[in-house]
Length: 225
Ligand SMILES: NC(=O)c1ccc[n+]([C@@H]2O[C@H](COP(=O)([O-])OP(=O)(O)OC[C@H]3O[C@@H](n4cnc5c(N)ncnc54)[C@H](OP(=O)(O)O)[C@@H]3O)[C@@H](O)[C@H]2O)c1
Image 1 (cartoon, rainbow, N blue to C red):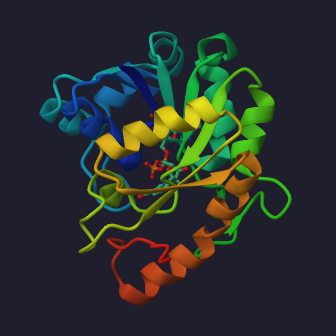
Image 2 (cartoon, rainbow, N blue to C red):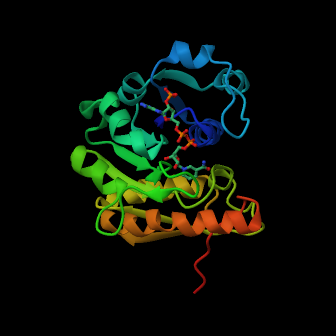
C-alpha cells in the first residue's frame, strides 16, 4: 500500500520504519524537505536529526505534506496535535478525500508546562475536529494511547496490551485493524464511532502519570475481560 506518514518526529519515524519493513511504499511528510534533511538538530529527548534516520531507511522518501498525501492510499497524521489541522490543510483537502486518515496525534497543550493539559476534551476530540474539517476523509483514531516504540512492538512491555480504534467509517476501521494486526497487535478493540476518540484522547493524563510513576514509557493499557 502507498502510505503517507505526516510527521518527522519520533512517532512518524517509528511508524514509517515499521511500515517500510512490512513492504509498504512509504513517504514521510514535512513542511520543507530540504530544511528537514539539512537540520542537524536533535529533538528534546536527544533523538538524532532526521537525516541520520533517513540514512538508515533508504526506502522511505521525504516530501512535502501535500506531495506525500497526494501519492498515498492511506495517510497517517503523526504531527503535534496543536498543528495537526494546519498540517492536514497543507496536505490538501483533495489529497485526503476518500482516504483513510489514521490519526495518532494527541491534543496536548504545554502552555502551562508539564504535565500538559488537553486543549479539547469531554464533548469533543481532536479526531472529531479533523473529521469535521475534512468531511470526505475517513478518519480513524488509534495508537495514540501508547508510546511510539510500543506501537510497532506491541509485546515489548512484556505482554500484549490493547489498541483502540474509533471512527465513523466501518470499512476504514477494518482496514486499520488489518494494518494493526500486521504490525503485531493482537487485541484491537473497536470503541465505536469517532466520538469514542474522546475517551482514547482523555486517557493521556493517566498515561502521563503512569509514565512518571514507572519512570519508563514502555508499558501499555490492557483491557482484561
Ligand atoms: N511520542 C510518542 O511516543 C507519542 C505516542 C502517542 C502519540 N503521540 C502523538 O503523536 C504526534 C507526533 O508526536 P512526535 O513526538 O513524533 O512529533 P511532534 O514533535 O509532536 O510533531 C512533529 C511534526 O510536527 C510538525 N510541526 C511542528 N510544528 C509545526 C507547525 N507550526 N506547522 C506545521 N507542522 C509543524 C513537524 O513538521 P516538520 O517535519 O516540518 O518539522 C513534524 O513533522 C503528537 O500528536 C503526539 O502527541 C506521541
